[in-house]
Length: 94
Image (cartoon, rainbow, N blue to C red; front, side, top):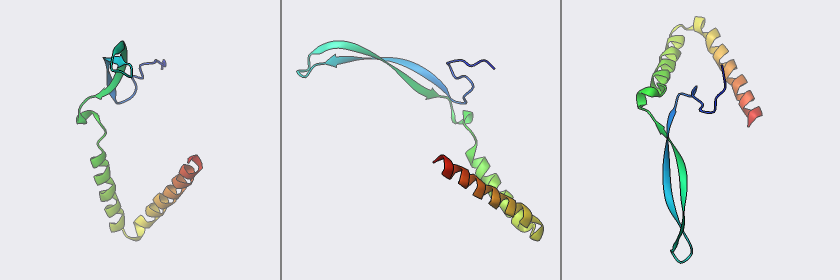
């Protein structure tokens, strides 16, 4: 993969807009013109990740593990241990 400056591998696409503004002095007289580039995200909600689907899946998966009873306890313990390890890593980073 070739690295480019346009960052085309990100999920969000941006539109660059050129905006000109007048520069005034303390008396309100126009002394010049400044051009600014604004980077505005564009796209629809269909382009974004489906967070609601992920949350619903996690809840239903947790309910299914609880319904398994003692057979699902090993997997529940695994996810609890995984969560603790992740929290340790986050505390190291922060």
